Image 1 (tube, rainbow, N blue to C red):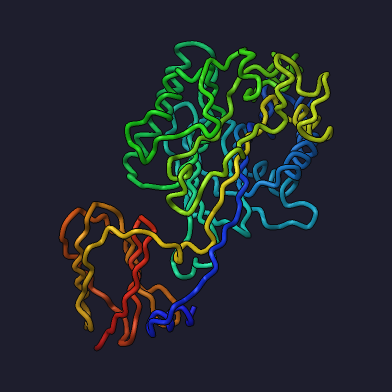
Image 2: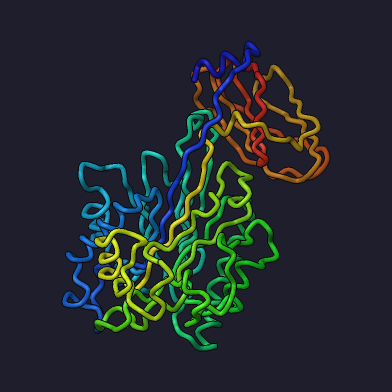
Length: 426
């Protein structure tokens, strides 16, 4: 850290090898995990058996981000998932998000993540009509994180209203509309993923259309496999169906075999195009256990499902009536050293200062900028985030720090980082 600042001060050229990491992201409706109902019980949905199944599936995929629907609202049960199934065989790197809820629902969403690569930035609720839609914002533990530069991934996890009726379709649409309004109010140009059990029967449904045709481009979502259509009970879409793993019901799991596309991971344009350090890896989208040969059939029926090992297929069948959906993304390990274009035409400030810092910025376009001040130990002593308008503007701060040499770091939302020396005298 000291070397970075000394290099900036002395105008040395720092050469950092460009490198990427790959993150695996899995979403899964785990069918009333730890939740007993009138139809799902310990006889037909035993939690000890589910633990064995989930361990098998989890070890097969090894996700860095694992989001779920239909887990009990009991925090003890949510911790059980972490301790019994994820942090096994000597692992202790997985953590779960803090639990919050607003809607009165006995089944909820949750997120688990690989803490050796990721940290939880925030968790909020976008909307609570029928069920909460959760927003989990994660940051990548990049090589530059102490310098203030890293990638963020924001996962929206939804379990939309079930039912093949116009009334239920309208309820799904309202849940999505509420969520998009929330994102519009945030006005953040982030790396978004919208994942969950959507319970949609066709791509023309209003809820789905709102997601993929939203007028706000920053929160317009994309189907990575670009497969619109009438998915329900349609042989032409047999390779994308995610429900049901069972042809006949055991009283808990839905019946009918593989004939619906309910489960999705949609991505924003930033993720598709890699605009903000995170990029979808082409052809990585897959429904685990889907081989296209079990339309209207159980996934473990004849012919043998060879899309995964036999124990994984049996675990998928035994645990839930849904298949998990997986994507992979590339994330930049050294975001501060990637060349990006600037929209700043002029950036000057008074120097040295005693207390008051006045920054003059002339911007070619409106955008966000992070302003951070570091001491020579690499510690942040001041930080702010500004929305800049097109043209000239003056930003004023009162800076209460000891006399000394500091570094002011300006981070544009294009990824461009500019560093300038600041001298404070008392």
